[in-house]
Image (tube, rainbow, N blue to C red; front, side, top):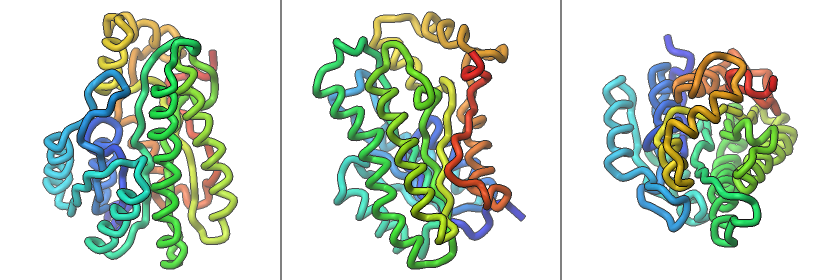
Length: 269
C-alpha cells in the first residue's frame, strides 16, 4: 500500500530537477503522473531549460516504477496551454487529486540591473504560471468533491530577501500570498494548499545561475553553504520531494496554508 494509491498528480516543471523528484517520489507511493514542462529555452533565464528528452526520461522512470505517466509539453505562462494540459490529464486519467506547481526559473542580478524583460519573464513563469495551473485545476477538484492537494514551490527567498535576486524573491513572496488566499477559499472543499520553501537544491539551475553571473559554481555553492546552520552545501531534490509527499498524503490532511521550510536551518540565521 502506497500513501498515494489511486491518486493522480499533475506536476509542472517535471522534466528534471525538483519536478522529476516529485514525480518519482509520488509514483513510488502509487500515484499516476502527468508530467508537464515547456521543453524549450526562453530568452531568459540565461541558461538552458529542460528538453523533450529530459521529459521523456521522467516518464520512463515513472513507468519503470509501475505507474502510468503522461508527458505534456506546455508553457505555464499560456492560459490556452494550461487549460489544454488539465483537459488532457483528465481525459487520460479521469481526475486530478494533486497539483504540484513546481515550474520556475531563477537568475541573479542587482535590482537596478534587472531589465524589464527579465522582470516580466520571472514574474510570468513563477507567479502567473502558478495561478494558471490553479485556475484550470481547481474547478475540476471542486466539481469532483473528493478534496485535493495543491503544493506550490516557493523558496527561502519567499521568506527573506536575497541579495542579487530581487525579482526572484518578489516572485516567491507572491506565491505565498496566493497560496494563503487560496487555502482559505478552498478549505470548505477539503482542498489543502501549502507552499514549500527549500534552500538551494542540487540541480542544473545552480550551475546555470553561476555561469550567468560569471561565477564559478563552487563559489556560488560556498556562498550558499555559509548561510546554512546544518553542515550541508546543497540539499537534494529528493529532500524537497519527501516533504511534498507528506503534504500530498493523508498524513497532512489537516495542514493547509502552511509554509514548510526545507532549508538546512537557513532561516535560523
